[in-house]
Amino acid sequence: MLLLALLSVAIISASAQDSIVKYVDEGALLLGNGNISLNDPNPITITIDNYKQCVGNLILCFASVESLTDADCSLHFCDVSIHVQTMTSISAQAKFRGNSADFVLTVKEGPLSCHPEVTDGYHRYEVKLLPKHCQVIVKGAKPPGNDSDTGTSEIAEVLSDDHASSEEAVATTPKDSAASSTNTIWYIVGGVVAFLIILIITCIVLFIFVIKPWLARRRTNRRPSQTTLSKSVMKSSAQSSKKSEVYKTDIKPGHNETLSGSVEPSIEATNKPQMSEKKEWTPSEIKRIMPFIESVLMSLGRLNHIPDDTHQLIENLWDANVVHEVSDLEKIVLRAPADEAYVALIQMIPDLDHQLLKHKAKYGTIDTTDEPWEYANKAENPASMMYRLFAMSYPDVFKGVEGKLEDPVVSKLSIPGLYSLLFVDGFDEGFKKKLIVEMRARAAIILDQFTVTDLQGSAFPMHQLAIQYQLDRNGFILGSNVRD
Image (cartoon, rainbow, N blue to C red):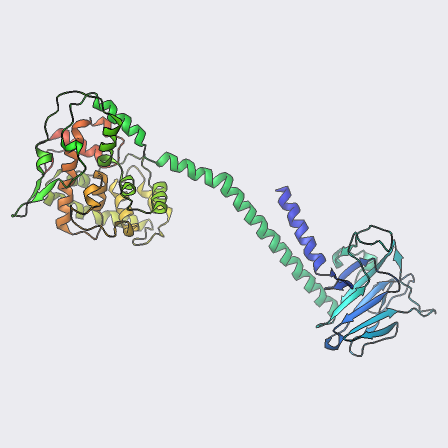
C-alpha cells in the first residue's frame, strides 16, 4: 500500500506541473497559473505565438532585486507589462516574426527600475493570467537536468500558489480566483485518476491472491468425486454376484407403452438374471456403470449437451456434498405408481417455485444471483429444489431434447439426469410419467451391485431409490405401496 500511496503522490505532482509549464523547442510554454523557477537566459524574452488570435490579458511577473512591486504582482515582483491587444510594451522591445512576437525585457535605469533577480541561474516568475487562443513561451528555458548554459543541474521548481511563502503570497483578485479554480480542478482530476489506478490495482491483487484461490478451493470441494464412487463400486462388488448381460450393454430405454396406454418395464429390467459368482470389478466395468449413477451435470457433460462455461458455473453453485432431507412428496415420486407419483410431482413444484422466487430466483435467465442457490443448498430443503432451480434458470441446456425415451440425450442420461427432466416445464404429463418408470427401470439394472450404504453420498435420488429397492423389489419399477 505504501507503493500505491507514492504512486498517487507522483501522479498528483505531475498533474500540477503539467498544468503550469511544458517544455517545447523554443523554451517553456506556459499552460496555467502558479509560481515557477526557470533557467532561461538574460535578458528575459517572452514569445507570443499566434498573437493575432489572442483574446484576454497577460499578467506575468518576474522576481526583482528591488523592493518594488506592481499592482498585480507580489512584493519583490514586477510585471513584464505586455499589452496583448495592441502587442506593445513599456518595459520590453517587440520583434515580430510572422504570427509570432518576441518581447525582450529592457530595464531603464531610474528610481522605479526593476532588475530581474537571478539565483543560481534561475529566474522566478508568477504566472497570474494567460490570454486564450495563443501561446506564451519563456524563450530559451530548458527542461530540468538540461541546463548546460548556466553550468548548474538544479531542477526547475514548479510550485503551486498554495506552496508559495507568505512573503510571496499572491494578491487576491477576481482574475486570481478564476486562475486558482482552474488549478484546483486539475488537482482534483489528478487525484481522481490516482484513486482509480489504486482501486484497479487493489482489485487485481484481491482477485489474484484471494478470490481466485477461493473459487478454486470451492470448485474442488464441490466436484463430485468419481474416484471415491469408483472405489465404493469396487468394494461392494466383492460381495456381489456376476453381472447380468444387460449391465454389459449401453443404456437403453427400459420400458414400452402397451396399446391400453399403461407403462410397463422392459424385459431386460424385469428378467435380469440373478448373479451367483462373486467377482471384483475391473476399471472398464466401473466405467460402464458410472453413466447410470453420475450427477446430472456430469451426465450432460459426457453427452456434450452443456456448454463448458455453464457447466463450470453451475458446478460452483451446486454443493454436491450436502445431504438433503427427503420430503414426503419426493418419496411418493420415487415409490408410487406413475399416476400417483405424477400428482405428487405437480404438488411439489409450485411449493419449490414459491420458495425459490421468494429468494430472488430469476427463471428463464442466467441472471439469478447466488442467494437462491445458497438457499437451495441448505440440508433442510429437498434436493428437488436444486433440480428445479437448475432446470428453470438454464432452460437452454435442455433445448433440442424431445419428450420421448428414444431421444439421443434422454436414452443416455444417468438416473439423476432423468430425474432432472421431471422439473422441466417443456415436457408433458405423458412423458413425465414414462420418465418416472424409466428411472426406476434403469435403477433396477444396477442396484443389485450396491448396498444402501454404498450410495449414501451419491447424487440424488440414487440413495433413496436404493432404500425403496431393498423394501420392495417386486413392485419397485411399476410402483409400490411399501413405504420408507
